[in-house]
Amino acid sequence: MAIIEKSAGAVVFHRGEKIEYLLLLSTYWGFPKGRIEKDEDEHTAALREIREETGLNVSILEGFRQVDEYWYHHKGQRIQKQAVFFVAQAPHRESKISWEHEDMIWLPFDAAMERLKFAGLRELLKKADEFVKQVNT
Image (cartoon, rainbow, N blue to C red; front, side, top):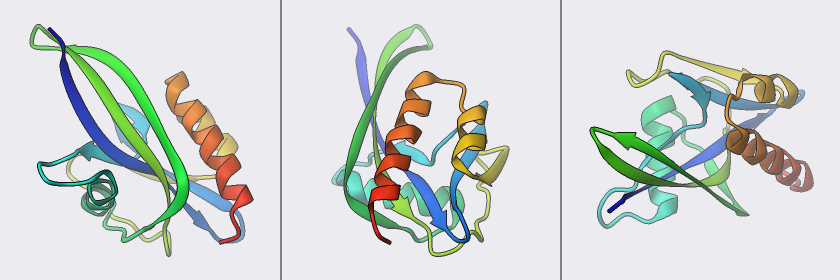
């Protein structure tokens, strides 16, 4: 029987002279996310994880919710990961890396796409970028 693990996070962007996206490195490049704790909704979990992993207090933009599902094995268990992602705007780029990650970087869309290894994350960034460009923030 598979274990279901649920997490929440966001594609975090900052709009300065150009739109840049925040990527975190932990084995591979990705977006801030983490497990949803007991009695926590998806938005609250995403905001908490982003704050813990980056030090940023972001604003989640309404109207975007994407689920990335994948399977992996851990200690002989088959685990189904369900990661819910939102789009969140950072008020500035001054972020701090958490102990959980090796590196972090702000990149424009094309450069961020090149760093993302997994097709699901690239598709997520593509949809998020289209959404961000439609929203007047």
